[in-house]
Image 1 (cartoon, one colour):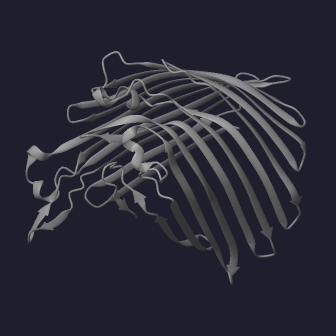
Image 2: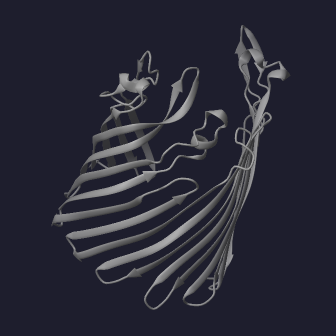
Image 3: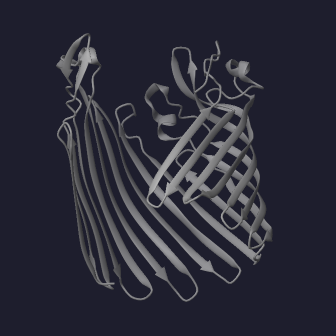
Length: 418
């Protein structure tokens, strides 16, 4: 539709904190453009007391700015072209410890910069729809004399066919990554890509079947096929009650990231990708009464992983290694109650996850962990939330618990919890 809209925002706060932003939308039935500009800064020079003296904070300022522009052009009734440009910069002086506040030699800063360009094409034919995308991305972070940066170019395309009871989608992507990191060897780069076929069949409103297959590629890494099969059944779908159950089995692969492979003398170019056989069974139940709604769900899962990747201490240094076999199994559950008390709406949610991630086999030094929980991973996590809302005013209480974990010290295991 035809439109022209401009929004301006300005904020001012203590310690010379300022934010200014602009949003502009302009277009017609053929062209639409959306632009966002922002700039913020803060001296952050608050006062504090240290050793019975008052000081004004130094070297804690920050500033940032950014621009986002999105343009979409409707070529005809079946084709649309789009482009997005994004550039942001965030510069922060790192607040020193109190005893170093007056010592400029201890001052440090960090700067993050991100630039992205994305081109899009969407089309719709008589039988199929398709999407194509090309993107260029450049992220840079400067800290002291160190630089961590990446340049990557990616292209992706997919075709989709929707039928009365089924959907088929096929496509692929390819990505070239050129990191610019002081800890990497010069000339480090990597190619990655994949092709896939997805399908979904819904013979009735109570039954859904899906089958997918994906083949990944990466420089100097062999990635096996990753198929998956699943089924979901809703035997009961009534006005006030809804119950469903489903299961899924899949072969999954996780390739080592760039730091795992190339981080100076600590990286491990010979790492194998993780290869997992995974399955899960899940069910849900929804009940709705006049003023009350109850929702619950439970998921059982089991992941049998070969070549689990983990950074572990090897003497005085840490290195990424493959753990021969890890078995992760557990249960996730949750429930939500929504109900009114007088004119106040209440919503109580509880989530619990139990996961036993057991090392089944590995290198000789990790034998103390075999048959026990994986280091650094808790067996229990629990969260709860109570939300109270009346019209546009709300109050929430959030609680989170993380159970006991074991340290990664393979010689003297320690436990901690939060």
